[in-house]
Structures are given as structure tokens and as C-alpha cells.
Image 1 (tube, rainbow, N blue to C red):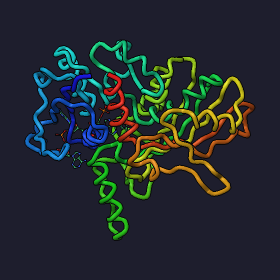
Image 2: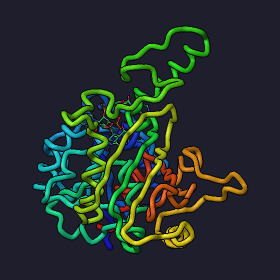
Image 3: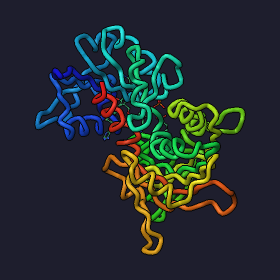
Image 4: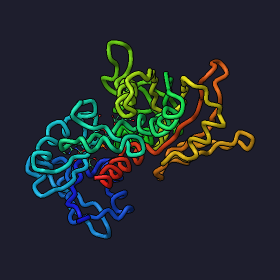
Length: 334
Ligand code: 25A
Ligand code: L14
């Protein structure tokens, strides 16, 4: 394989920075790398492989000679620039929600549906972070016992809302501890010492009462697993955690799986690590997941209210498996 010319659009964001880190760690075969962001970041320097690279302003002409472009600059930016990149002959791996449900665009989690990338027409979508970590676990269960319905509640980290949101949580935490009123500019109510059942933090709710984040989990799960008959309902909640999304997941299957059978399946599942020993108070938390590529599973048990259902707790780094690592895995497949 020859070395690739790479571009990262949105390189200065929380996800873009992780993309650079993962490309470096994986020693991705790079002939050249271009860092792109908005006018705001023009001239900003970011470290890569011992060098300091200057950020350029993203434009329609940024992609001449680029083989693969990793995008994480928001939906509007992807909608506009990804087609320009594809027309220039570049393959876009897009982390935004802009293209995910487009029937022409593969939506890929390499452990689940790697073959889907072959159908790309220049754009491949990286799924929503909460969905990625859930489907990595659902897929082997579906293959073994046919999933009929999933009920999930999420506990999502603040880094999913970007660096300004992280700064707001830290400042609010300090204010509260100092006895001062917390200031809200990003979140509608304080996130420090609180839980907020609204993601994203603005214009979240559709007319059916669901948030757009919840509907992403519903729709993207069906597309990635390739089975529209799986019924999914979700409640997505922001919690005062820096990095690492956690999920409580109830899975009803057509054929009964015991907890031991599910554990045995997941022990063999790629990208999954089981941390589960109730006798020793062992279970995974966001702090276990933060900084590594795996999806962690614990609290695996049979649902006592149903003849063939399981409950479990699924945790992963939302910026890595939920975004940058999944995108680089797709680039590696390419
Ligand atoms: O629309 P969507 O799909 O819902 O996505 C909305 C936003 O969600 C984030 C991502 O924001 C995206 O913009 N996101 C998407 N998927 C995510 C996921 N899975 C996700 N977050 C978590 N998990 P973001 O904060 O990660 O980064 C935004 C990047 O996009 C660049 N950008 C914005 N508009 C652009 C554009 N680039 C080109 N053209 C445009 N029109 C944006 O660049 C950023 O790189 P910027 O120049 O506006 O940079 C913002 C400045 O913010 C500071 N900063 C950012 N991160 C950090 C930071 N400072 C310190 N530490 C950081 N980690 C810098 O000063 C930077 O210059
Ligand atoms: O669709 O935790 O990828 O705010 C990524 C960040 C959805 C929201 C996406 C978060 C967004 C998510």
C-alpha cells in the first residue's frame, strides 16, 4: 500500500485533535497531512509527529491531491464541503450527522458492517457516538439470538458538546464550590452537579417528544446492523463527566440467551472488553474507558421482568471509539 495524502477538517476541535493523536499512534501511512479549520483558527499550530503544523482555512479547493479527508467540523460544514472533496477524488470519512441517513452513504462501524464501505461514492459516514458503542455490543447478540427490541438510557459526557462546554462545566463546578451562582451560556441549566435529559443542548426536541440524539440512536442502529425490524427506544442524558459515555441497555431477543451465554459471546467480540464481577464490585465506568479504544461491558444480567431479555452497562470513550478512532479504523480499511 502506498502512503496516503490526508486532510483533517475541523482539526482544532475536540474530535479533530483526537484524530491527529490516533493517526500518530497508529503510525498511519501518511505521505502528507493538511490541517483545516475555520477562519478563527487560521495560523494556529498543532503538534503532529514531533512537528508543529499550521492550520489552514477550509475552502472548496482544499482537497486537490488529497486521498482521504477526515471531517469533524459540524453538520453544516460537512454538507457544504464533503461533495467538493469527493468531486476532487478524495474519500471523505465524515463524523457529523449530515450524511448518515443518506441511502447513498455507507454508515460504518468496522466491527459490525465493514463490507458496507465498498458501496461508497466518495463519502462514508461515521455514526453517532452513543450508537457506535451500543452496536458493537448488539451485533454479536443479534447474530446469535435475533434482537427484537432495545431500551437504552445514556449518561453522556460533556466533551460530546465540544471544548466550550467542557470549560463551562469546569467553571460552574468551581463557582458552586466557592458558593457563587453557576453561569450558563452553552447548557440551558447548570451541568455541574446535575443531569440534563436534553441532547443536543439547543433545538433538541422533535414533535414526537424525542430529542434528535435519541432518534439518531433509533435510526442509525437499524442502518448499521442492517435490520429495520429491530425496535429501539432511547432516553439520552448529559451528565457531569468529562469523557466517556455510559449506557444502561435492555435487550429483548427472540431466542433466550442466559447471562453466561451473552458473556461468552461478548468475550469473543472484537473491540469489546468485559469488566464484570459483582462479587468483587467490579464494573466498568467512564474513567476506565477514557483514553482507550475499547467498548467496555459490565453488569450483564438476565432481566427478571421478561422471559428472554438481558440488561447490561456499556461504556466507551466518546471521542475515540465514538468519533476519532472509528474514523481512523474506516481510513485503515480504505
Ligand atoms: O453538527 P453536528 O454534526 O451535530 O456537530 C456539531 C459539533 O459537534 C462536534 C464538533 O465540534 C462539531 O462541530 N462533534 C461532532 N461529532 C462529534 C463527536 N462524535 C463532536 N463532538 C464530540 N463527539 P468540535 O468542537 O469538536 O469542533 C469543531 C471543529 O470544526 C471546526 N469548524 C467549525 N466551523 C467550521 C470549521 N472548520 C471549517 N469551516 C467551518 N465553517 C472548528 O474550527 C473545530 O475545529 P474552529 O476554527 O471554529 O475552532 C474552534 C476553536 O475552538 C478552540 N478549541 C477547540 N477545541 C479545543 C479548543 N481549544 C483548546 N482545546 C480544545 N480541545 C480553538 O481555539 C479552536 O481554534
Ligand atoms: O451526532 O454528546 O455525532 O453531544 C456528537 C456529540 C451528537 C451529540 C453526533 C453529544 C453528535 C453528541
